Amino acid sequence: MDSAAVHLEEPHVLAVDDNSLDRKIVEKLLKNSSCKVTTAENAQRALEYLGLVDGNQTSATHNASKVSMIITDYCMPGMTGYELLKKIKVSGRRSGNVHVKAS
Image (cartoon, rainbow, N blue to C red; front, side, top):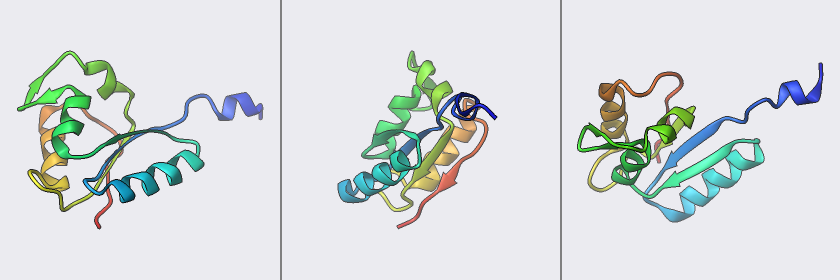
């Protein structure tokens, strides 16, 4: 198999964590695993990146289509990781793999 065919597209992971050290560790691990990583320091920033603010779709729809996986902390101020994933799911804008990292 051609090595170019194996690396057609690297997965794009959105990592959400309010702890900057945890965010940096997750980002480094994922980049070492050949993932493209975008980080957000809270659920609101993640929703903004995905083009979902207050449940409304915004012009950032191109970002949502590029994200293939979301890893989120469970316990964050303002909105938990679980609440974040519920909002994304309800929006109907995401499909595919959604994984939760709890710390």
